[in-house]
Image 1: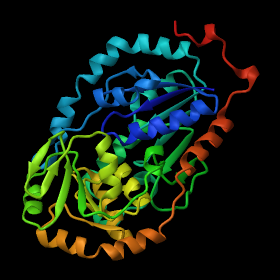
Image 2 (image 1 turned 90 degrees about the horizontal axis):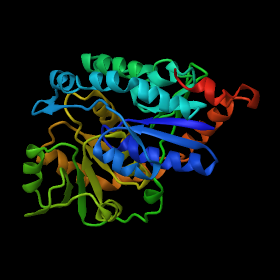
Image 3 (image 1 turned 90 degrees about the vertical axis):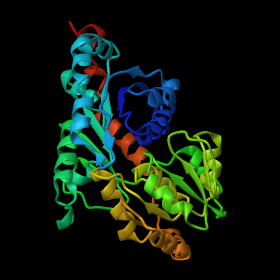
Image 4 (image 1 turned 30 degrees about the vertical axis):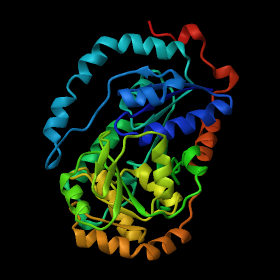
Length: 356
């Protein structure tokens, strides 16, 4: 099959997952064409020669995610697609796609409908549309992320929803699956060393101040900062990250879905510090507390962090009992692709598929 794969370039979780899934798809004999945006995403997907498009990025201020700044900062998307829609549509039609996959990337959703091809949505955000939230979680933030999710993934033939919990689906086209784990993560042999790994997608001076007052060793990845500051070592992303992840005794970090999945797979207790006003991060953080695999707070105190680190054996015991199948997501996707694959007689001709 010819598959167009749209990948969100906001954060790297979707990107790392796309590398794993696209590699598996190509190994199964499928042709994959990537769409993405952002320098880091395009660099990480360079082996797949991605088509660069415009995409939505989130903007933050010191109070958390800013809806105003995010809206204003993304207005340039519309002129890009007005200028490039005919070219992109022609290029995609010439590829003769049999199916589209969207990893929370809306252009691939719109293009699939424009070309009349089946769409497969693959993300964790759709969990918020199919699972009843707790009463105190029914906020404006929830409504906002639900609206964004509907826009990004509307009209999909199938929804492959990554989740840390096994939910019962009420729709035959909604599939709850365990998350993919990168091959490099699977190959690690984790140990419990002396340091705590800290991964922050945005600077957090308040958290750094709390950690500097503690008698612990922290290895911090944030904004490519490098250097030593007392008990804190700042490091830039690179080969050393996997070593630090594998050998840490615990993780403190913002609560993106992918890093939590890696931590669970490696049996690393996790203290989540969700980005403020970003509902998805709050949702992921609450899972940590509810499951007993970690804790969370938007503004952790020294007492909070010291209590978490003192209780690591209990978290590790729960992690040892937690099980998920890192192959499930790809296996379900391959089954769906077999289902939506066109018959040879139904394959559109190249001439018919090209936009006029």
